[in-house]
Image (cartoon, rainbow, N blue to C red; front, side, top):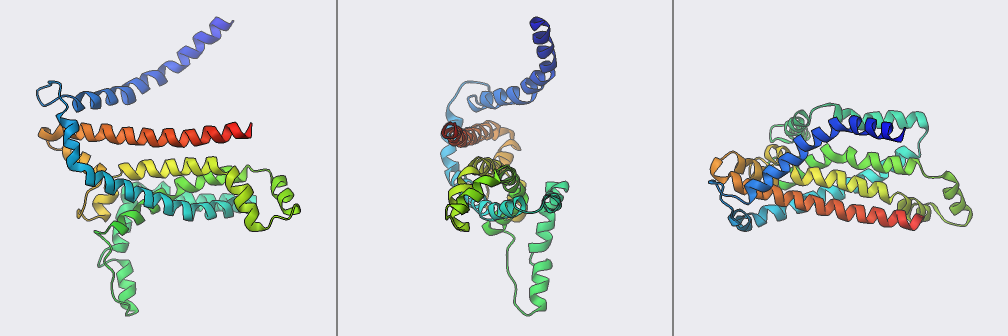
Length: 274
């Protein structure tokens, strides 16, 4: 009987294993191969050494991603708390409104931001109507950060909302009965117990932010490059294909390190609860 179940389990897992090997493991191996070879296929470390020319790009990408993630947390945590503490019927409506923009493709949402923030866009039309002057946003780092926050904010709100909504209300009532005010309940009870949702939200926002290229291209106006833009440009030229692979590999390592750090915090939390 156990052998039969084991065979069925392996059979059911086979399509997932094939998919993983073909579309995750194999591409990663190709990236690693091109990273450590030149155009002739010979082994080399030149592609790794060439990364020193892109340190500024890495620094800018990480800094903008960190800022966008922090802003998403500042906006997302109170919003998630409000949704979680609302009536069940209201929660469904608010979650639907939060997810509604996600039903539209990322490219269309980014173009809509361009239409709003462009020099001749909706925002400047309104400002000129009220004689408040104009603001130049497209082509600035602020516009790119705004685009990241707009596109990835739901990824911060949803895991935090899920965690807070599952908290035992008796804990909150007990804290209040013991003399803890609303701020104390939030900082000493709700925030620590929802830290797993916060960590998930930070990961889900930071990873796509640091690897994005379309948002920076359209809202950045081509005035500066992020890691994603550099990788795309390197892969468009066959002579720099291997350097693009090296940058991709380093970016994947950075993402994996971030995920490992986040998971370590999560594991520590789980251990303390047990």
